[in-house]
Image 1 (cartoon, rainbow, N blue to C red):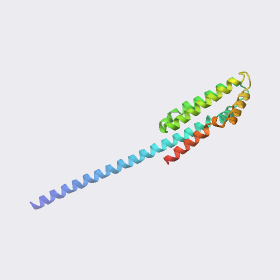
Image 2 (tube, one colour):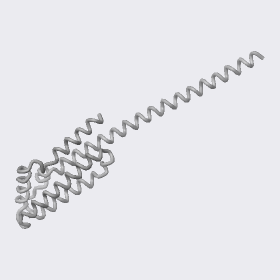
Image 3 (cartoon, rainbow, N blue to C red):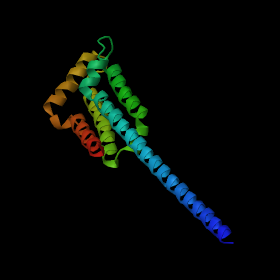
Image 4 (cartoon, rainbow, N blue to C red):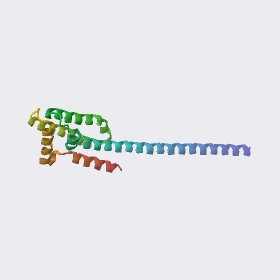
Length: 167
């Protein structure tokens, strides 16, 4: 009788130890999955900051003009091309807003709107049949006269600052 009781006690103790070990294993597995999820989320957020930094650089007016400068088009065609390129770049990256703060996303949206406004305001003063070089020169002169209108540097700094706070 004593042997059966002792055997039953050992079996119950082993079952409890096995169950505790299994619970410990599940807890460790969940912790690893949560850590991997956090690392994956962090990686996605950092990639979003990289893409938005690239967007900011690509829609900077001086960069756009140097990249799209075409001497064979008119000022009105260049105005259209500049605006279309900004809108296309922005639309391509619009999904990145879910990974960044509302403030940074608003800064990027304001950059886009500000650049479109500058292009259209300067374009309205240039004859539509003038060469694109006239529009490009007028935009660059505007940016040189009013450094506050060149927001891409401020937006780039905000993106950089926020990305560094994640690391």
